Length: 183
Ligand code: IMP
Ligand code: MG
Image (cartoon, rainbow, N blue to C red; front, side):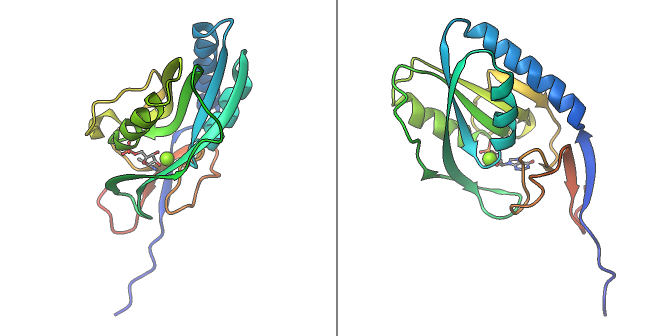
């Protein structure tokens, strides 16, 4: 028997204009907190790349950027619980004001791992900026210093976030409903 082909559905959760406004606010806060100092942004690939690109352009400080890549998820929606370093930083962060830039803080496993790795390298300060936070999913007790939006426990895509590498280019953050899934 054949089933009618069901499609993935996207429902906008945070619109582009709201993201823009909030990113500007977070950037202003960072600029205030580090007034007169240099900062070094580290983007966690690949999800944070669009957030970082928008954020750094709104920051009114001498800034540099680098990227790190880890994997904790397979191709699907659930975390494997294991974090692995896929790409290390290009340069030393000793003595720098580092801001780790994440797309979303979910279980906290990734951030917990990254904070441990980066602290060992003796930055002057280490803070975390996350576009999205899903506090209800937390396994590790980690927090971001700068949060764009706190969201409910829904799987979201867009503005850098993906599902199996798709949807990163959406301008809004959208909830992804998969065919056959309850929610
Ligand atoms: P954590 O280690 O569970 O905190 O997961 C962090 C990473 O999982 C994020 O950087 C994302 O790449 C991915 N992730 C968690 N929740 C979502 C989601 O709702 N949509 C897309 N990716 C997600
Ligand atoms: Mg990510």
